Length: 359
Image (cartoon, rainbow, N blue to C red):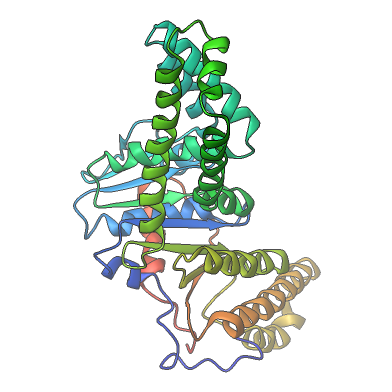
């Protein structure tokens, strides 16, 4: 690429084949700025994993779900088999509804003590910032862990939401620490408050039930956190496009993942114009051909060349920043939308068949 000397022999292979070959992986997160092609990348990665794994699940945690649109079939909150596969499923999780559903399930138990417990849990989750999402995330992970899949690919929400999701274990630990501190300082006051909020007659039991639920949640989320920080089990694929804001967001994401101790050594760059060619090569062709082109074609080619030069600049920066340690995969800009199983299968081949930068 422009201003960058690339020696394929010295760089990690520019593909996601390393993920396909790492049979120990159980969790693969795909994330990045909004609108860079995370869902398409997640679906294509799932398609490739399905070739070598027994059962693969793609989970969307983005409130604006796109898996149904990508596969052109209805996908719900339960694992839905993908047409054309016998070992690939997908599901779309609405995290905003999980906490409400958990509270409804508690209320359905129907006893006075449980009414008080539900009321106290509602007060707790509304008073500690982030704990409602953390507990929803815990319920999601309980559900996913209970399913029989070899590997799970998470199509995550845009970067800010994803970073908050990854910080849930810390949030929950702090929240539970506060609850335990209150318990130690005020004794049975929590249980009495529970009895007042409901009509239960056994404050001690209600208090134990609250703390028990929170402890169960903490145990699950800590177990998940341990798995997230194990590079043999979990990795994160950063997705971007060759533009300033997206490259900047990717750098921020890589730094934050490092703080959380989560492995990340793959970057997918989407929407690349002629990834196998250099802007200088195209410029030479354009200079030779320009005079024979009509004015409209000249204007179109001029804009394309300007975009290609800009992309090469940022792809060069991407290799400068990550080329020595990351697998940087360039995905071409196509002249059609990648929707439906057949097109996803075709496009997914670019993830494992690297573009030859020296062509």
